[in-house]
Image (tube, rainbow, N blue to C red; front, side, top):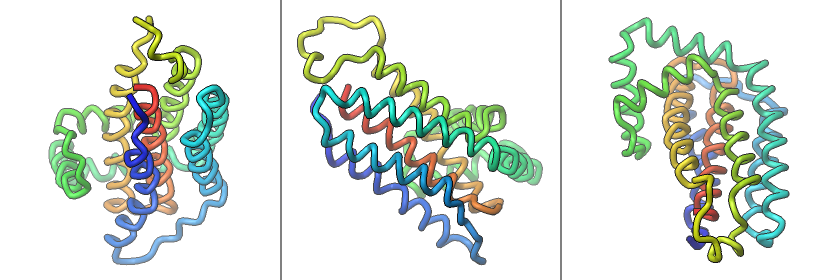
Length: 220
């Protein structure tokens, strides 16, 4: 498949739009300064831009750099955000029950054009969010990129391959589906249960989802 530049640009452009949308729904401003996480997001965005313009033979090295940056991001999220996010998710669920929260997330997801999300998918994503936190999502993306780097063929070689043992496209689609649910939850909780810095993790996970979309546009 030829890389889809329009899809790539849309994935990166989503980050500021998500943050602006969250900010617009707040009645009171919330301080969101986190220079470390902002730098991680900036580095991931820059690496994604380099990836699009790189020669096929250098893309695997850029994936390695993305993996390293995602690892640093996961450590930062675990140390600074996981506990607060998981507590906010529990608070919101305790107020009206799980079914009501899933329905509320579905409504907000529809507003964000997340049409492929079902109640079952959101419920499963909530279970993963409660167990893994934000850092778990970053690590999942990191592991997916590592598998692609190690096992997926370079684009220039793909046409000559009749089969591959590792179905990286199926793996990507599965991870993208998981991340879509996680992004919907994290960005909604940033609005529904505002905590310090809630919008920045929303932007970070949105960009991590964008990295997966970039890989699908190139390798699948």
